[in-house]
Length: 141
Length: 141
Image (cartoon, rainbow over all chains, first blue to last red; front, side, top):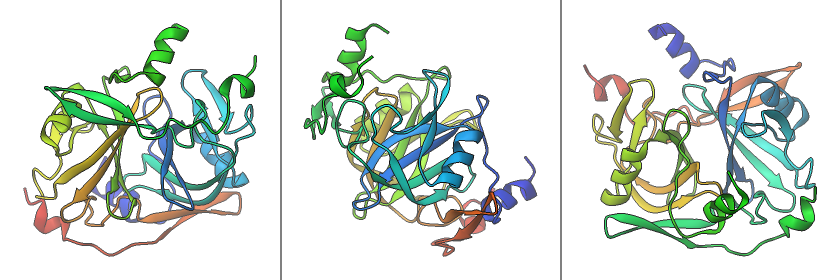
């Protein structure tokens, strides 16, 4: 990319998402009320377009290879209060009002465990083990 | 992945990062004081190991194809106050004390523009145009 392309993407007022080789940008969803990071997911061009147009979060599931309206199975939708884009436009940040809980495990946020250094390695511990819903009941299939 | 592998990764206390095909996990850095999202970047196994061991953020630059200690050119290091991992361990969240500013453009956060729907498309506007430093002065080469 030339310097002027880069300048335009970083300083301009046009949305020019920089999709990766798989056609995706990273999206971080944070709780609009508390700023807590709820989840990290991906959007393809269509998911991004639908999110902007509808004001509800759409993602692209890499594991399922499919467009995915957040909450379509669980009812735990995300209403987008604000969307931002980062400097080089390969990441999106959305502030959302989360119905239910963001994580498929039932926790409010996907980041429910912390990582601590121990003996040259690392261990995890729960900072929020509390499930807001029972995933077995919500995702029955 | 079998159900038990998935359960172990999601409910266990062992750090088992799920690196993508390029050997990377996504990392979100937030301001430890305000919870503001500062940047989204990537870590390979070595960057993650060094971050845990040193308490300072290391990343892997996809554009440069190189391990990268945040602040090595600019002096704008990130001291890691807390690290978390998400449910399926393909994303890392770090709460950091940011020296200087996180964004290479000089802004405090990389997310200095918001995206708004307009006529079936989108436009950007600056929410924080203020540069904490002059990138031309900091990154001279």
